[in-house]
Length: 271
View 1 (cartoon, helix red, strand yellow):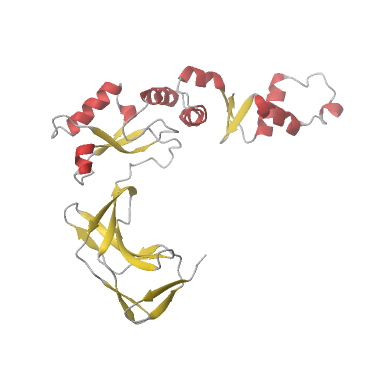
View 2 (tube, one colour):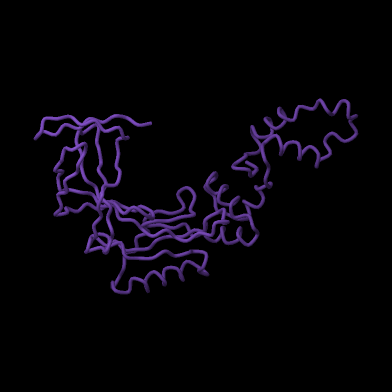
């Protein structure tokens, strides 16, 4: 929904009415930030609360990481309906990491992290790389690869600046729950990695054997699972069809999933 925004230019004592949502949209030029080799696209950012406008530079593609503020020696005039506004030079640059390639048919993302160091980050650098954790035999091999990547530092303090494929609190800037990586690898071998990820996210547990006992398969809905369960178990066997047709599957499913089972994104688990 487009909301009008009024900006008052003190120099001209005029009020401009912008029929665009408050926020940011691209202006008509771009610039290159030499120290980081990051191409920045300026956006006019309108603030309803602050009643002003600012130029913010941001990379227009890939994924965002952390905002890093810098002052650009740039004051660019912006024209709206014939009136030129000279906006302040202070801008905000949002550094962005490259997207990790993902196969379009991949349902569950592989657990991966982007590894930099605190020293580089505090110095204004996000130099690092993505690591697919399932490609390592164990945790030791992963950390050896990280130290080799940042061998320009005597004792690198690793910083996991971004991560994908981790449910819940399985990863943070300074910690990775390697038990989840091991469990995910086992689940991938058995073709149930998406179910394992959902189960870990719901329970906070990572033991693959417990997951295998809890996972009952997939279903279109709770009622669909109840119908299949009744048919497979022979619960209504021996009951005449003219009576069995009155069985309330909806109510039975409601009772099943009230205490004993849980339904998450098409997967059924024991509680």
